[in-house]
Image 1 (cartoon, rainbow, N blue to C red):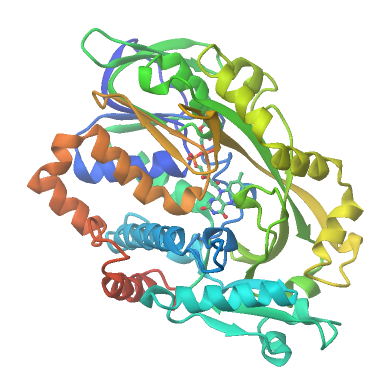
Image 2: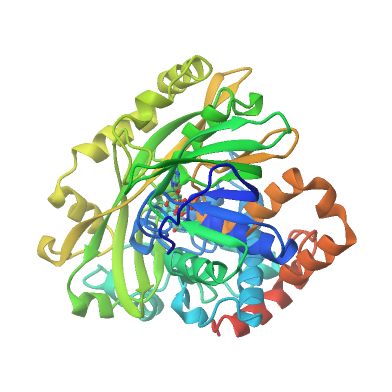
Length: 500
Ligand SMILES: Cc1cc2nc3c(=O)[nH]c(=O)nc-3n(C[C@H](O)[C@H](O)[C@H](O)COP(=O)(O)OP(=O)(O)OC[C@H]3O[C@@H](n4cnc5c(N)ncnc54)[C@H](O)[C@@H]3O)c2cc1C
């Protein structure tokens, strides 16, 4: 990527994207379709593209479709299943696949196999009560055509076919059940991000600066923004003027949002949770498993911590991970600073943060237990899935940092959120993306939502509407109300992305 050229100060740009992860990549390539003449700079503090959360081993690579994640289908007090979130998530991932198909069809990215692979998504439970829950979930989800192909079994012989590694040495009397969706995927978001930026780099109006950190941003009198950017190699500083700025800095977005001073950004705080996996080092074990298998989360565990035994396809190689395990660090980025958390606290977010600390005991207890774990404890957790797992066949891998959003709340003082939050200012000149779940899978819906807020007038124009429909044919159509349309689109995207 681009080394710093001799830089004139105060260049006037249309767009600046801060951070070179999947979110900036998605916005960048979408804007290039919508505004081909726009001048765009991308600033990334690290020496390479996509080596924070978007990199393959820093996330689980699950194309979140609600096929397997049990936290998207909670049970109501009357025992029924609430599938509303699942329908939302499946819609968002189908949207992402439509956009990626568009990129493939237009030769903007080549070889979809380099970033997306078909891997069945399964939910797996043990104990009678959980088997009953899974059956109810299956019955509820299958009412939507988007989950029609889901299979359920509590028959050990069938499960043996589906997940032989998990069934090894199980007593035939143990109540077990699983569901299986063959339409599931594993996504290498790092590879996709790099491919998109490689394409953007060839555009004469786009410049990508690695090892360049945005240190500050100030509102200009004309409504735009002035950014101060430091070259992390030469220590040289420069100033950039831009009409629009996207804070796609992952864990770094909160600090930048605070620096922007926009009123919409007041009251937000962040709580970092680091992720860890056990990664299998034994090829014979890796070869025995071919699915993403999600179980039930522990009591008090945050929503994105369902334990899962996960086949990954990274750079053409099959791998196997189990996790996530949570760790604690005050860093907001894997390559961040221990000062990230303390320096993010200010007068507007200190009370929401205290309130969240005082009201989330179960989460706190869960995190303390996780942090206390050693290798044998983690292997013991894995033994719920692989009965005879041996410590020497697995090694610890450090994943990315998730910064959970803490938000001011009128009634509760402060709430902890596990989703993503797009913060925009009223004139649409700046947007920040906070939070990390369901994350990369939903990048296209997140960016479309952000465009609707920041480019309101343009998004309503017939030209933009037509282009958006070309990129994402389901735009403006709800999966809940028109699932058959989404199903047809799934057929098409599967063919283009090589998922059949
Ligand atoms: C443990 C874990 C598991 C996950 N599993 C999944 C999953 O299975 N499926 C899924 O869809 N999502 C998953 N996610 C979420 C997903 O990884 C993120 O949502 C996604 O990668 C975020 O992309 P991003 O572009 O916002 O951030 P990033 O990829 O983190 O990119 C942000 C970039 O901004 C740069 N930056 C920061 N500050 C500055 C600055 N001041 N100046 C310049 N550059 C800056 C950073 O160096 C970084 O490169 C997981 C996340 C974690 C941590």
